Length: 250
Ligand code: SF4
Image (cartoon, rainbow, N blue to C red; front, side):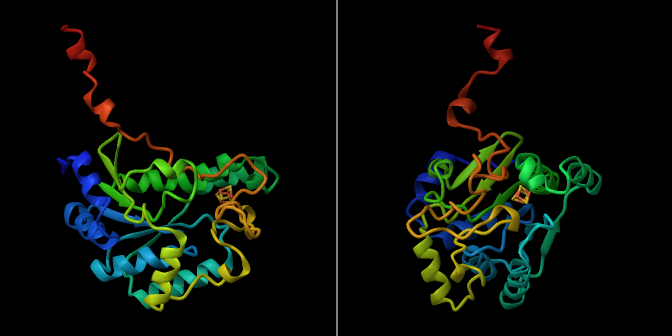
């Protein structure tokens, strides 16, 4: 279904809305071709709880890389049960591609080629399943990384796909208070200094005073796994560019 959205107007309005209002709009606009991605990390309980109050059977996509901390998998089970989420879908890499990558890099692809490791284990499985949806929602926030500073609450990608980030304006403190207020348990590694948690080979505790995502791919020139960057965002300028056909008529 084609969605006729005025993103300039919507995004201006959403800057002053709370996340629950944005989620409710997105569910009404995109369901049933709408899903949420979750890493079941330290802040995931916030968005998952909000979603559970609005549409408990919204598909929750989890990238099961095979490299998660056991604590993350246990936390996932705990949250799914507590929040009554009924449609959590594990996405896995193509087994042949993964085996070839592991063999090529002596069993440690995350050390020798983390970009390919993320691509095969995260980007490809997500890209494949997104074909079933018109939009997806994520819990990323503007204050997390330099790249994320410029995200808009609703973005359109090439290929008629939208992404909704209702927590864009949240801080880590907002999330912390939200979890406390709603009595949602925190990821068990959070208290040990893991402020952002992904796969165990690429996650370290954060040192006092360091950036909240500094424990991800520490020591490497990498701050994103690729799932938020692999699709090109359609900008207003691009949408207004004349097509080749029309420009040839000038
Ligand atoms: S985060 Fe690390 S282990 Fe996980 S997919 Fe990326 S490189 Fe591989």
